[in-house]
Each structure stands twice: as structure tokens, then as C-alpha cells.
Image (cartoon, rainbow, N blue to C red):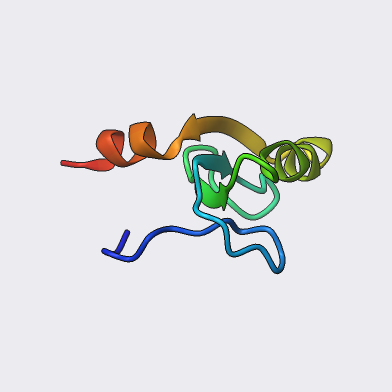
Length: 72
């Protein structure tokens, strides 16, 4: 991630991201692969449901926890 403040992935939203939604599409990604969407408080549930209904959602983690877990 860059030095810029991460923003929500919801269409048209410019709010600061608080959550990371880790997902993968099993038809095109290996099981361990994780793509990410960022979400503000307002859009976390909506984005989670969108991914969940498709069977893509793997984890929802606070952004600060995700960032600290990604450091080598």
C-alpha cells in the first residue's frame, strides 16, 4: 500500500477505508490467492454480501491488522 490514505472500494465512495475484504474467485484463482477490496464502515456489509453471495469472500479484517500482517 502507498502513503496515500486508502479509500473505500465501493463505487463513488471516497471515504477512508477501515476494513479489508479478502476474496478469491475459485474459478480463476488458486485457493491461497487473496484479492482485496477496501471498505469504509458504511459499505462493509454491502460489499461483504456482494462477495459472499458469490462464494468469493474469505475474510474481513480491520485495515490496520491486515497491514501489520502483510509486513515481512
